Image 1 (cartoon, rainbow, N blue to C red):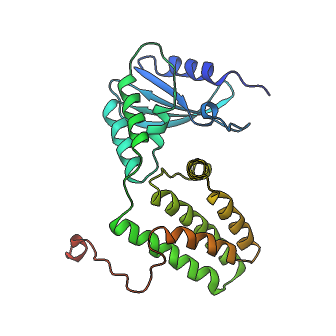
Image 2 (tube, one colour):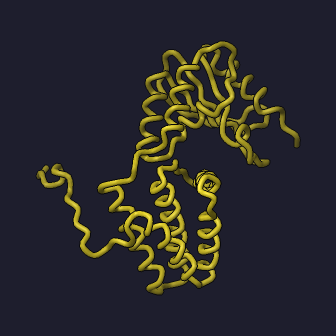
Image 3 (cartoon, helix red, strand yellow):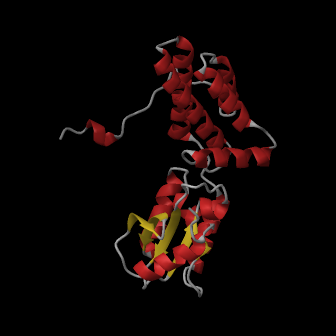
Length: 245
């Protein structure tokens, strides 16, 4: 079944459900590329006054996810995403197609573009220590031998942790699922490398019972930030943890 143009459909959805919208943006796969037959419409809606929320619906045969915000809530979510190195909301607005005429929302779009261009903070301190420790621990489990089903899960976690550490070590944005792959590929283009390919080949080999390739790829990433870390780890709990209720 052929679906209507995604931009026209998103524009109609906003007009019907959010007639007081200041601006709205259609983003993600249908705009940036890589859309499939099951892709949905990801729409950020800016209202003058609203309680921030998201909703999922089907509109004219298109599944749609709508993220409704006022300016304050949108900026709050951008800040939360930046802290976790996954700039979902900033990317939706900065890379989105504006659905309403006029200049409303231009300042927010410019802010989000600046956030993306600046990149995440340098990985350091406890965050870096825990990233090294977590990946080291996974590698130890991976080569230690276990039930094959457990090793499959460990291999997947090793791949994901290595990918996230590689991006963080290079001050590149991260993501989940297909967005993690997209960020890896983009970094590879910048560095003229193929970390994405080496990690993928390592994961496939590990899932077939051969862990060495994935171990080598992960160790190359760990070497960027000081190598493996396990023995000697010491982290203090936050003061509140020591206060009796």
